[in-house]
Amino acid sequence: MSTIKITNIANKDNNGGPVVSGISTFLSTESVKFPVGTTAQRVGIESGSLRYNSTDNTLEFYNGTQWLTISQSSTLINARGVFGGGYVSPVVQNVMDYITITTIGNATDFGDLSTSRHYLASCSSSTRGVFGGGITPLNTNTIDYITISTVGNAIDFGDITNARGYLSACSSSTRGVFGGGQGAPVANIIEYITISSIGNATDFGDLTVARLNLAACSSSTRGVFGGGGSPTANNTIDYITIASTGDATDFGDLTQSRQGLAACSSSTRGVFGGGYIPTLTNTIDYITISSVGNATDFGDLTLVRQAPAACSSSTRGVFGGGSVPTNSNTIDYITIATTGNALDFGDLTVARSGLAACSNNHGGLS
Picture 1 (cartoon, rainbow, N blue to C red):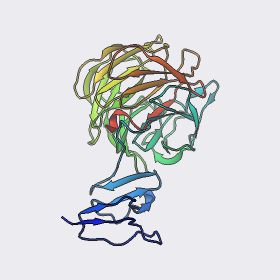
Picture 2 (picture 1 turned 135 degrees about the horizontal axis):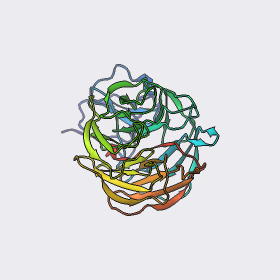
Picture 3 (picture 1 turned 180 degrees about the vertical axis):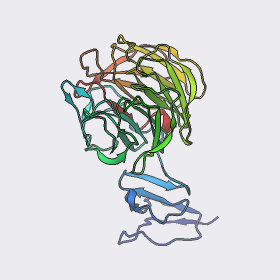
Picture 4 (picture 1 turned 45 degrees about the vertical axis):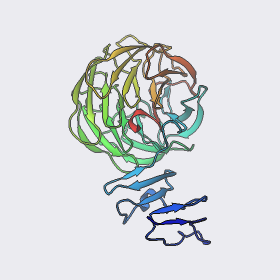
């Protein structure tokens, strides 16, 4: 093994530094400057290539098939949740606001969606949040994205395959999956995107039951869709393997048939909260994502409500907004690994329902 000590790998012109070959170990008290470029500039790359993505502000590497983000440890990452869109009678919203999930406190303005809409869905990697579909008041196929660690307005990503609202979404670190919704008619559609790129969604398969107003969560390998209406409320839970394509498989049942609920997850446990039966409920129930079976009672939200949004860190779930039946700005939280009632977290910047949420540290990234 050869060892070389280098005090500064970048050369004086900062244009890539010296060419060093035959070296297996670098020892330095300074830093290494990697190639920098946008997502669109990923061309002619070999397996094992490492670069800094200036579009998403993240370090990434190519495994020969796809680009993967080099994420911070879940114990170190500044876990941020972003809430987008919603409805405040009589106005559909484009507002986005954010929280630091590991603390408590009120949300802060983030920016605006590219299109005002409600009953949309959101998913995310450790760097990028994606918002898809919704009602404007017409059904839309819009997908837009944000860089979660910064603030600013959303940017156009592409389109989902069918314009619809009342859909849901979940994700791994690389792929986002949208399922269900209300188009014409109620949809069993599942479709996916590659979060680090831009472009239109691609068909994935079908849900076991066509339904709208459902919720979704995930581990790093499995996506789970729960509840919804077809059009009456049901208790269906079904699952997919995110990295593949194909139809969903039956998982079990929620403790209550309901729609207009929200879901979040750690790497092992999915949690569903709120909704209506048709009466409003504050029910929280949970599943173990890697198994199959019926949901188990977890506790209660601080308010009975429908159409909230939920996101999570690797340990904490957060539910924000919803209709009680008036629009609420309430944010409350749970510790996912335990059971018990939710606790007050703070307030959204705008009281609203039919919003969506994502985060940079959820269970699908672990």
